[in-house]
Length: 225
Image 1 (spheres, rainbow, N blue to C red):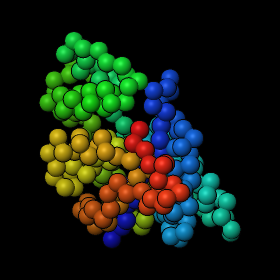
Image 2: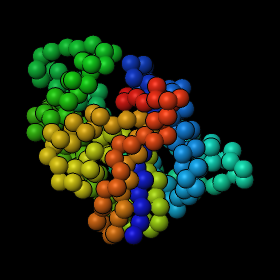
Image 3: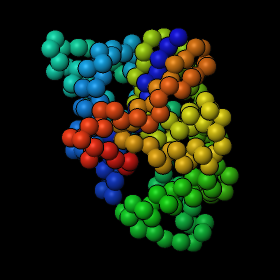
């Protein structure tokens, strides 16, 4: 039986010119996650990330803690899997707003996430025009990634985004799309979802947990962007 520890990236730079980078809070979340793994004496036999900057930076924060431990600890080199990348949420929202002939302030978090939920549901029904990736293509690449991860023995660390993580959960728990989308939009930054696997059978053990941020000193670091 293998173990897959899946992590959503640290807080990204919402409402900035470059979302795909960690904020100072995101870096701190990643380092605290690394400290949590270190205290638990968790070593990883393989590491995977998507190809996005926020995935790589989250892993770098975890690695910083491992490298600074006494004695220093090593972590395997990460393998990049494009199937772990997030969907292009900006283009989905733009396609949705074009279809309904509306506009929103993309820097207002409440409006943004309310509209993203509607856009994702419309995307799943194949109602959006001109998107680069269809819902079926998104699910197909996530399913392919599941097969890749299932073939890796030992304890595996995976750093990805809320979309692919919730799409995997949809497969494992046989969720409907609306439930998957609702869970997707509740994903915490640096949240841990753990599976134990036997072949391609995934058994959920932990979902969206942030034990490294739950102390009184760190609760202000729990974020969702």
